Amino acid sequence: MACLTSAGSEAQGASMNRPLENTGVMGRLLTQYVHSARPLSSAACGPSLDSKLYREHVDFLAHAKKAELPGVEKLKKQIKIKAFQMQSGVALNDEPSKQNKDGQTRERDYSSESHYRIVSPTFLYKMSHQRVGKCIIINNKNFDENTGMNVRNGTDRDAGELSKCFRNLGFDVVIYNDQTCVKMERLLQKASEEDHSDSSCFACILLSHGEEGMIYGTDGAMPIKNMTSLFRGDKCKSLVGKPKLFFIQACRGSEFDDGIQTDSGPPNDTLETDANPSHKIPVEADFLFAYSTVPGYYSWRNPGRGSWFVQALCNVLNEFGKQLEIMQILTRVNYMVATSFESWSEDPRFSEKKQIPCVVSMLTKELYFN
Image (cartoon, rainbow, N blue to C red; front, side, top):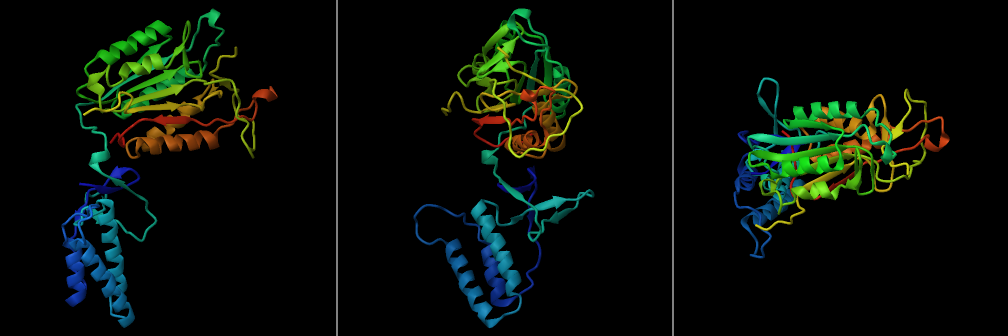
């Protein structure tokens, strides 16, 4: 059964037990309308009972307005609510409710400015498996001299904060530090061959230097696709139909985002970048890629506080991780990175720069971690 939610959290529907305040024809019409159980249909099968009743209500209210019958405005409001519920798939005998701290249920005030989301189990990923799932964090800080890559100061803080966030969401988190390309591919190959039948999803976080389409191991670069493709539906059967989440903190090029209409101020620390200074379902379904930046651009990192993207992601997950849907979460991350961060450097070429993360989703349902 579908239900309305506020701020991404599911609210149980409360049965309507309130007596109608009006009797006679007005009460009869509203009672008929509220309790008519036949679902709406898009099939061309002639006027349904619901549509006839609704037209009857409209005609009645138009007449009542002219006659200025008592209680008309309240009935019109209630009928509008029921019409919205029918069109949105909400059961007619259900009404959004909220439990207070004492466990008592109170109904939502439709006249308030609260925002509701329509959630249907048909379009929700099942998160009731025995485990939420495994989360692998690959944290590459030190690189071979021949790669030309600098030490990624601040990445250990990123890894630690991400570990806390994903553990709080219920994930089994494992961190692997300073992995070569071969080791990265092998450990993800092993993970893809595990049995995830009792898991609801899978997550992988890559913290390293990068270029567009590439991620650095400690000994060089490799295509990101080499790792993510290991979890395709035709290769990892126990994750078919389950969300596979990849969060990638790395540069995707060498361009800078100069921003527009920005007011710069000197931050506390200098910044660095993660860049190279030199039934059948589609096998690609149910993937989500959350990149720290858009293609072609630098990704900024603070040696003391960590990367902008990870700071924002952890901030939003800590506050809303069990309330909002994943795309809502990542949209807020985008907003935070775009509005709360700006680079500063003694070298003007690296100063007053901005960043915007990028989300690529092949998810087929909505994902909540609650």
